[in-house]
Image (cartoon, rainbow, N blue to C red):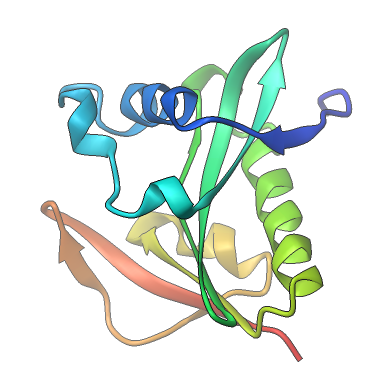
Length: 139
């Protein structure tokens, strides 16, 4: 297992570059930008001062949604994404959130289920890829 790492806030520039590299390498940087994300919370994990994983968290009253969980390919499968999920679950809970959702790529639903997320509704297509809405309710 990897050494302990700290999760901290990151700026949008860094987030955009990582997102593009991991998710849409054949698209221009503007493709990975999300409307309204200058008001979102962005968290990341660094390895030797390089951002290797990040996630963006949006709040609408007590309903939170995370988007664009991304980890560099060389670092995937080592628990970094899971660490970010645990971190934002605690963050939302601490900030009185009642529900946390995401649109997961269909093949990743089992990953989110490990953290208590449940499928909500039917799968849908986004940019030609199948997605599934997942949600976690806080008691």
